[in-house]
Image (cartoon, rainbow, N blue to C red; front, side, top):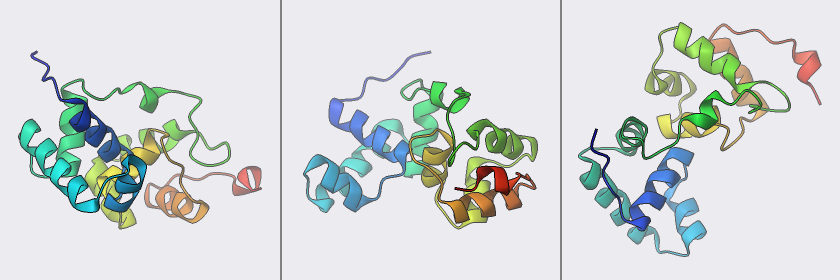
Length: 145
């Protein structure tokens, strides 16, 4: 497989997309104007031959530009000790794509991906809604603060 080489600024854009950052968050992180972030996102999509950030993230994983290891790490937790692999396995077993599961939550696939890979954490309410949508039960008393 031929692995494309992205310039550093597009690599950053791809990692930010995988993390589910908003335009404002990206702009603040890199000290850039929001319009520059939008242009950078368009350039990333063009470079990868895709139409959306979600497709860019999927292409990044498929092409080996993003590392899959965090998703499989057993010690990554969703919120205060809940293991990430439980919900990822439940989503996969239910036959839901990342996009379909994100739609259940009313969120973007990038947002969900950033939580499933452990880059960001679910809030308690989001975690409960996601677990309920996947028909996963936790002993919430064990996980309560």
